[in-house]
Amino acid sequence: MTQALNLYLAAPRGFCAGVDRAIKIVEMALEKWGAPVFVRHEIVHNKYVVDDLRQKGAVFVEELDECPDDRPVIFSAHGVPKSVPAAAQAREMIYVDATCPLVSKVHIEAGRHHANGLQMIMIGHAGHPETIGTMGQLPSGEVLLVETVEDVAKVQVRDPDNLAFVTQTTLSVDDTIDIIAALNARFPKIIGPHKEDICYATTNRQASVKAIAPKCDAILVVGAPNSSNSKRLVEVARNNGCTYAQLVQRATDIDWRALEGIKSVGITAGASAPEVLIEEVINAFRSRFDTTVEVVETAQENVEFKVPRVLRQPA
Image (cartoon, rainbow, N blue to C red; front, side, top):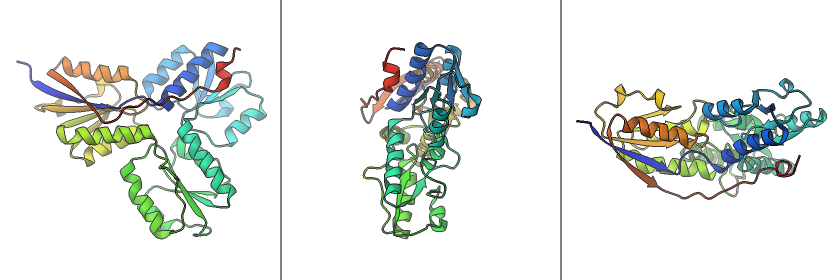
């Protein structure tokens, strides 16, 4: 007799509006200009998505100097330093910026604070493309990075009375609370964003994981190992009562031995993971267990972002 298993499917999960838009931008660019279209950095952090676009004619590179002058180039959803579009313009390239509008909002905010003479502190992960892009909006030394509460104690600022902070959009809400508190304690005059920079999709996906974690013996997060928001979902699950939480890229990554004897599993996905991979995971459980699926919805999302005008105009 097949073992009974409850699957709790977190909602919202998977694609957010910024990821949806970025993928659409690559597909529309291929339709408009034909292959190859170059993309600087993975358009979103998901191997399945990148491989699919590669088959359609997208060429992924890490730097602009790997692109020819005469083919269009797309900048990834994570955003790029100001020097990148400037270099593309200097080479008279056609370029399309697929930066998520919520990341662009942080860029605009940083620029506004800089114009007002404030030095910026960014809460983010060193080396993440979004952090590199945001820090690259301003001249060197104008944005200081902090990753932890300990970093706040050590950061050397120009003038403690003229500071503002921004955050990487894909961080965990819980992670940033302590760092923001430490910033406010050390620099009482620091200016924060009107509304938290952490994006609605990151917040919603974390809230839905918090809702299912106490019910689950295990939680699987479908996402890529280089996806910041996916890795945060694993941490949120562990911090909210589900000790076995794992990141899987797809069904073939599931460690079935570790799941022996369990009665309930939660499934969610990072903002760059397509629904087809989530379905694949659900079907893998259905083939092994007598599975009951329950959707746990904590919010509804109806955000949509327009693609850039250049793609809406005829070639």
